[in-house]
Each structure stands twice: as structure tokens, then as C-alpha cells.
Image (cartoon, rainbow, N blue to C red; front, side, top):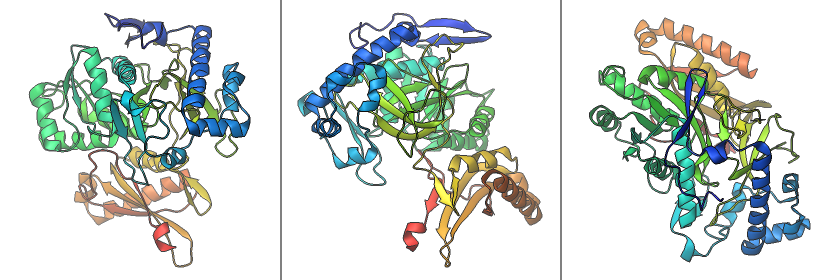
Length: 458
């Protein structure tokens, strides 16, 4: 039975895995034997390819150019015959040309920020919203959220998918929702305290800001707050940043995975085993490819993640290039789910900086900064081009209050240590500017970590 047709389970099921209790929202599909799952994926892939060919001129033209017809998709491996979809394709067809349903059937619109051009617009039918609610409920349930919880949602509401996605999921579960949105950090912490929130959702960088505010307010997270779970999304979260938030707020943190292009929150979830991100494979078909050649790689190989939406009505996508670098693990998980897991996202291919011929990912720099106790998790990477046309990179980073109060000698020692560790990690020299605590601008959503000035100096 299709998830769009079935009723929502009356009770959330659980499974013991070692000492961890693992809640599962939809045991039928999340724990489906792999042969049955792949059979379901193929049925849904064939249907969505036929719909895209029939209803989306972009895909019809692309498939005709490749000499591919819907009836050529006979196995899951045949997905490689289909054209890729890029973010540029979506922008070129802005706003609604990629939709497979007339606007009379589209009941809600969401969009990306559009900071690098036209935003990516996603449409939802009533069935899409029902599906989104169900998948977001899977995400929250995997983190241990139930109808007994008070969920404080600090993702931005509006066109951004984070706010509404987690809202729909919490509503589906029956939890109490605090739709705080982002911003007004002091007020957010006050509401945690006054309303007794037990779970919160935000970007990891904003979670760091909230943790700072808790400390500044003199609130004891153990004695004064009831928080126990944090759900992160919308930007990469290094293990070091996760540990920082868990320590300061006394919570267990869970990564989530979602993209505006694919639906928003609900594509992937982390269970209490904390061994990768389960992708909801009954709704999203995964591939990893060589980002340079487009060649499909075998499972377990690191490459660029490509996703095909199998059940979305208004805005189905075939072979969307996420630009996320990861690898897929198909081994069963101790939580009971049989869905494959993404191992840690190792950066995005479009976030990669090429400095003096070396590939540099911002997450590498963050990992080093957060491994050193002299620094706060607040930094900005500035990339520039010198007068002799050589690339130059500077990292501005906040030191701790202890280092700041110890004086310039302590700051210089911390600077040298960070410069050395970054050279070991990156293989290039990096200029370091150590600044006082609370100096760098805080973000209430996605943090802007990289300022690339090279385009301005051309």
C-alpha cells in the first residue's frame, strides 16, 4: 500500500539496540527487507519517469536527446540512463516550468534563499504535504520525540523549508509545537525556560548562539532547562560542533538531511546509534557519482550524492546532483532500520575552495578550530587574491574569554598553534587573525562562513 494511501500508525514502535531505545515511526517501510524495498523503488521509479516524460517538457527534451524512453527503465541500474538535473536547470526553469502538476493542484510553495541567483521554487500538492508531514515525523521520532514532547522550532518560517517541515512533522506526531522561528535569541532562551521545551530544532551554528545566550543568562541547562534533544539541519555540522552544543546545553544532538529541491526536512534522519544518516529510500533513490565524470560509483565509494524523488507529485526530480560529498553504507543498522545510510557529509563540491592549487573545504577548517580549546566555534574564512595574482586565505576566529583575558602573548600562542594545525590539515599556509569573543557577527539561520573576494578583484 502506498504511504500516500495508508493511515498513520496509531502507536510509535520501538526496538532495543544495546542500551539505546530506538523509536520507529513507520516500521513497515523503514524496516522493509531490502529485496522488497528495491522492488518498491523500481515500481515507483518507472511511474515517476513516465510522469516526468509526459508532464515536464524539460525532461522530455532531455530524454529525447539521450534517446531514452520511459519503457527503457527496466531495472534500478537503468536510472543511469536518465539525464542529471542540476540547480542551474531549476533556475533556468524558474519559477514553475519544472512542475508536473497544474498550479490549480499546487497548494503550497517554498523556495531557497536565492543568494546566488534566482531561488529554487518547490511546489506541493495536498498529497505532497501529507507525505512531507509523514517523513518529517520519521525524523523527529528517530530522535526520540513523541507526543509527550514540547518541540521548540527555531528554524525560520516562511519560504525556507526548515520551519514548516519540522512544524508539520511535530504536528503529525502530536507533539506540542512552539513555532518560535529564528531570531530574538534572548526571547528564545526565555521560552525554553518558561515553556519547558524538551526538544529544539535549528541550524547547528544558531544552536551555538543559543548556547552562548544560555551561558550569558546564568541559566543552568541541567537544573533549569528540560531540553534533552536537538535536531540540526540546513548546514554541515562537524562532530566537534555537535559535541560543543551537547556539552553546553546538556542535550543529545541529531543530524537531519533535507534539501529544498527534494522536499525539505525528511529526506534523511539520524537514529540513536549515530552511525550515519538513514535515507528514506522508499521515497528517494540514491546514487553516488564521480563529480568530474558523472560515472556511477559502487556502494561504499565516496562521491557526489545524486537523488531521485520517487513519490512527489508537484515537483518530481530525476537524478538531482546534490553536490554533497559522501559515501553510502547499506549494512543493516542496530536500530532496526534497513534503509541505507549516508556517512558524514564531507563538504559540498560547490563549497570547495581551490587555494594555490589545493582543494580546501570549510568543514576541514572548522574541524581544526573546534579541536583546539583556545577558540570559540565562531569564525570567518576570507579568500582574496594578492597583487601578484596569488590566492590568499585568512581565517578570522574568536578566542575564548580565558585566552583574551590572558593577553597578547596567549593570543599569539593560540594563533601559532592554529596556523600549525591548519598547515598539517590543508598542506598550505593560512593567515590567522585572532579576535576577541563576541566580535564576529552571529547568524540566526545559516552561518556565512566564507567571504570570497577574488571575483571582486578580477
